[in-house]
Length: 220
Image (cartoon, rainbow, N blue to C red; front, side, top):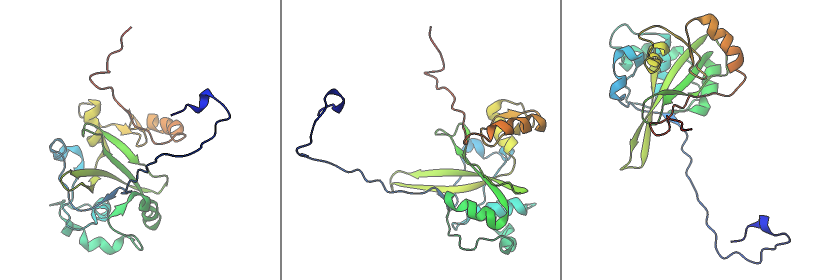
């Protein structure tokens, strides 16, 4: 091994060995039903987890957002009558993130996708819409890691109330807050949120990373 920075005029006379790492690309997509973590099953969390047996969880969440059910909200049967009300032409299931802009355009709906942090402690933005349609739909992409099969299953869950979902991690004691979906900062009025948007839209999607127990103290 020779550090090229130490000398000049060096030439390679031969290569004794080499190796190539190959990784199979698996795009994020939502499929069949996955149960929510226990701490998020409470109805007060603002989540609706529809029990589907197909790969259309994204579409069922979309329909549940447009046509809310009054009872047994997690049943697919509530939303089947409205299936022809949405346009999924040339869209393949399960839905991958790169298909979302096309679904937005065909249905004139903004889709914002969130997911859990590594230990399910916090919600973080994954894919925030760049469109500006009148209607928005917020979804949570959850994962189920089957290590014995080396498979990661994914599933979309409808966020019915983003304030209820996020306020616990801000200790707001039940108060309704206004959230910036790009960075998840909270505000106590829509006016403050509007002011914040002017600055936040100038940068890429952000997330707040909290210190761990080991690095939460600073020594001098």
